[in-house]
Amino acid sequence: MEQEKIIYFYPITKHDGQPKCICAAKRYWFQDASLKTGLFDDGDLQVVGCAIPPFYYRCRAWKPQSLSEAMENVLRRVEGMTDALTDTWLHPQVAAMLTTEYDRRWAPREDTVRTLTRRLLDRYAGDIIRQGGEVSVLLGEPADTDRQMEMTRELLHPYLPRINRLLIFYEEIAETDIWMELGSHLDEYYYEYGLVPQLEPYQSSHAGVQECRETDNLRCGKIKCGGLILDYCAQFRYPRILPESDAIYLDVASVAEKERQLRRKTPRIQYISPSKYLDTMVKNSYDS
Image 1 (spheres, rainbow, N blue to C red):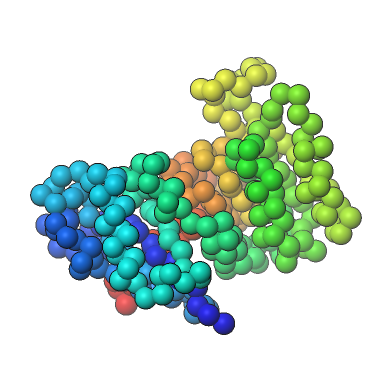
Image 2: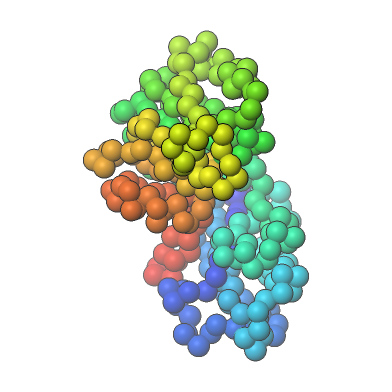
C-alpha cells in the first residue's frame, strides 16, 4: 500500500528549534526552507512540516501572493508532490496570512480531512464510544449539512452497533422541517441499528428571543453531551459537558479558540483536532 503524504505549513515559533533572531524570511527563503518529517504510528501516512517565518524579507509583512508563490516553490522540493496521494494542510495563522483569495488553493481535499479525522477518532475516542455508547454531533453551516452528515455516518460506521445515544445539534432555518431534510441520513441508523438520533436545535444566546439575529451566539442549550463530541462548527457552541466526564472533544474545523473556551468550562475534557495533531507531530520531530 502506497504511503499518503501531507505537507503541513505552520508558523515559526520558539518551539521550532530555530534561533530567536529568525523572524523574517530570506529573499529566496523557499530555496532552503526547513522541512521536517514525521510519521504516524501505523506508518502509512507521512507528514512533512514546513515552518514559515512570520515576516517576509527585511521584516516586511508577507503579501498573500508572494507567500503563496514561495510555498509553491517549497512543494517542488518535496518528492512525489504531484502524486494523487499527496495533499497540503495550513496552520490557521498561515491561512490568515494568505487571506481567502489564496488559502482556498491550499485547503485540504475532503478525503484528506476525513482520513485524518478518522485516524484521530479511532486513536483517541474509539474506546470511549465502545464503553459509553454516546456521541454528540455539532453541525456547522446549514449549507454543509449533507456533507457533514455523510462524514459523520462514515466516521461512526465501525461503532454503530455499540452506540445507544446519538445527539445531533443543528441550526434552525425558518419553514424547514429538519426531519425531512435529514431523513435520508437518519434512515440507516434506524433500519440497520434500531437507533433513533435525537435532534436538538441550537439556542440563541439571548434568553427568550425566538429568532436568532446575526450578532447572536448559538449555544447547545441545557442538553448534556458526553462520550465523543464531534464538532463541525466554525464557532464554539458551548456544549454542556459534566466536569467529571471522560468525553473527547474532536474539533473537525480545527478552530484553536475553541480549546481555550473549552478549558474554561471543563478543564478535564480532552480536546483534539487535525491541526493540533499535525502541530504535535511536527514539534515532536524536533525532539527526536
